[in-house]
Amino acid sequence: MTRIQGKLILITGASSGIGEACARRFAADGADLVLWARRAERLEQLAAELGTAHRVSLSLAVVDVRDRTAVNRAAEALVRAGRVPDVLINNAGLASGLAKIHEGDPEDWDRMIDTNLKGLLNVSRAIMPHMVARRRGHVVNIGSTAGHQTYPMGNVYNATKFGVRALTEGMNLDVAGTPIRVSAVDPGFVETEFSEVRFHGDKERATAVYQGFKPLTADDVADAIAYVVNLPEHVNILDLIIVPTAQRNVYVVDREGA
Image (cartoon, rainbow, N blue to C red; front, side, top):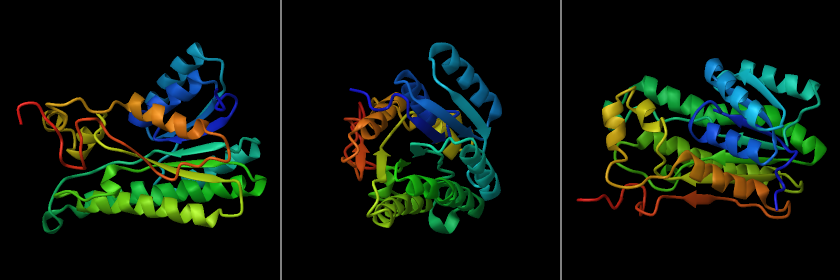
């Protein structure tokens, strides 16, 4: 049974990776979509593909979640059009750099904190009041296994994902007394552009992250998110951790030949 059909779902970071996979999955399930991302060309290409394949409504906005003014402007446009999302997928996020704290690049730190934490806050603050006012809505924050256990040189990225986990718990407390649901989906190793972004475009180093085992795909994670969103309204998944079978914690992975 699908409860997704006909819902309006806002996805941040929708132009690639897990966000793109969610857009494809939800469109196939009959949801109407609002897609936000920084890269207009990719958004437009994705929307063209989805519009051809599925009879759903699509609206796009070039939004950097770090830009609170841009977020508020895009959210206000939705509200004026009577398109308050039924579901918000706070997917936009990244890792930038991998270094010991005393050797880290503060620009990497700012990029992660501003995107993973402040970006999530910007979007949630812009959308959630309207969900609360109409007493309907579901927020899904995309966290990470890195929010449950630290790993060497992950320090600031770990801190941001621990923060996402804390915010998910706090948001659930804040909407107590309403039917609003707040969930987290926390993936382990997923082969997307994630590592290439972390290593500033070093494709060889990024590829090595996933060598010797079968990581999750973005579609695997989208399936998990769809499961969470599709549950009856009296059911709320507080936190769902999803990892490839080869992964045993954040840094123990069964690699072939290891």
